[in-house]
Image 1 (cartoon, rainbow, N blue to C red):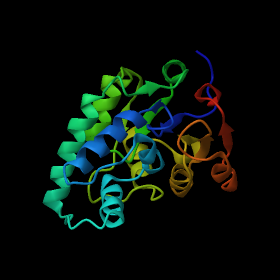
Image 2 (cartoon, one colour; image 1 turned 90 degrees about the vertical axis):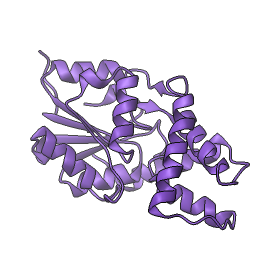
Image 3 (cartoon, rainbow, N blue to C red; image 1 turned 180 degrees about the horizontal axis):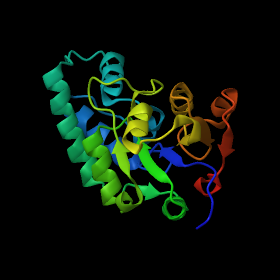
Image 4 (cartoon, rainbow, N blue to C red; image 1 turned 45 degrees about the vertical axis):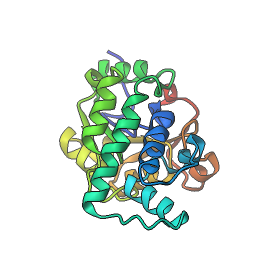
Length: 220
């Protein structure tokens, strides 16, 4: 059994282990079209990945000067339409980054505890992880359900720590955005920023993460 640098690892999902921008983009486009907001391209959605759907819908509704009212019920309805659009392009619209499966397997073989901590709703995160064949490599899949604070708040990182029974001082949080780095630090963990995801390298550098990685295979 090889020795790992940390006892526990918490990974962001989208932009860290996989590129699901096409499936996510099509889900958002499908749901916005259902309320009369058209002309959105998948590339337009990339900058929103990692943010909650409520925030995305609120921005586009205001930007297009739409009369649509976001309520708890209308948001729930939009999310259902989003899932229809997303699932129609899943898994063909999702690409696992090279080395992700192998890295998770190697850490698992070394006896490490592994978790996902994502802004996605937990049910949706589990659907994606299981559908991409990554479930057996993970001890826990932690999402951010409606009403819970999103990264950079450490809520979902703390949830993963709790489920893993992990010591933050011996845990590495791996993510592709400033929000991941800030959330991991706020939870007392070491942090690694990956440069191949949806965040910008220069933004990650500003926060001086403990590790800056150009490939998931470089996770220590």
